[in-house]
Image (tube, rainbow, N blue to C red; front, side):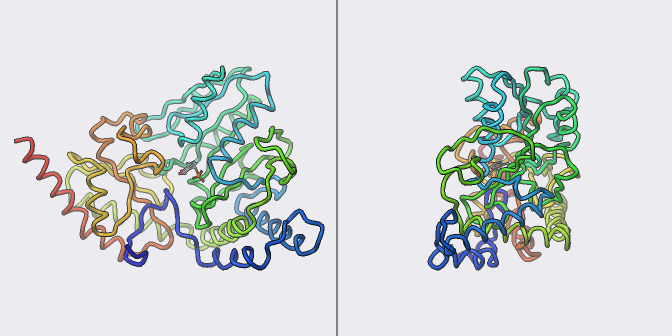
Length: 389
Ligand code: PLP
C-alpha cells in the first residue's frame, strides 16, 4: 500500500521522519561525510554539527549539552543507564522497576535477577499508576537504582515521576526514567525535576530509527557499556551516527516549537473525538488507563467480546494502521503485561487496540476510522455470537 493511502495511527510504535529532519540529514551522507573526531576541518565541521544537535536536544529537555550521550536507540539508552549505574555502584545489589515497563527494561531486569541482583517489581493500580508508598517501602540501603517509565507506550499513562524522583533523591538512590514515550509529547524540564538519568529515542519523535540519547545528570557516574575510541566523552564509544544525530537534533527543535505552539492540543482534540465518537456509536467500549494522566496522543480501547488482533486485521484492509500494544510484543499471543498488571480480565486485555496519533493526523483520518471501525466491531461481535450458538 502506498504511504499516501495509509491512515497511520501507530505513532507509539514509530513515526514518519519529518521532512525538515530528512532535509537536515541529507548533506551528511555524500557531502559532509568526514569523521567528527578527525583533525582536519572537513571532519571538524561534522563534529560541530553534532554539537549543534546536542544543544537542540538539551533545549528540549532543560539539560546541559554535556549531560547528553548519543546512543543507537531507546533500548541501548535503557540498558546503558541501568547496567552503567549498577557497575558504578558494585556494592549495591537491588533495583526497583514497575511491572509495566517496556521490554527493554523488563527483560534486562529478568537478566539481572539471573545474575544475582534483587529486583522489586512495583505494582500499578487499575489506572496504570505506580504506588509511591510501595516505592518508599522498597528502597533499602542496598538499592542502587529505581527505573520508572515516564509515559507508558501502551496506555500513554504518565507516572508520578517528579515525586518518585524526589523520593529517590532524598534516600540517596539513583533515579532513571525511560522517557521514550514522553519526550516531544509533554513539556520536560530536567532543571526542575530531580531525575538523574533519562532515555529517549529518535524514531518516536519524527527522527530516524537507530538513534537515541541518554541524559546523565552532571555529577552522576556510570560505567560505559561500549569501550573503544572514547567518543561521547568516553561514555559511548563508536563513531557517531552523524546524519541521524543531526536529524534527532532537528526533530527535537521541531518538537520544542510544537510544544510551545499548540502544546499538543490538536492531537488531543483528535484523540478525544475518536474516543467519544466510538463510545457513543458502540456499546462495550472501555478506555484503558487513567483518563486524564495520559500523553495527549494515545488511546487504548477494549472492545468487549472481540479480539484486538481481529479488529486490527479488519482495519488493515482499509489501510488503517493501529496496534494492540507494544510493537515488540505484538507477535506474542499473551495478553499485554501492562493491561494484566492493571488487573484487567484476560478477555478485556485481549480486546484492546491502541491508537497513537501524531501532529500529522487530521480530522479526515478520524472520519475514516469512524466510518470503518464501528461496523468492523459489529461484524466481529455478530460472528462471535453465531459461533457460540
Ligand atoms: N521504551 C519505550 C517506552 C518504548 O516504547 C520503546 C519502543 O517502543 C523503547 C523503550 C525502545 O526504543 P527503541 O525502539 O529506540 O529501542
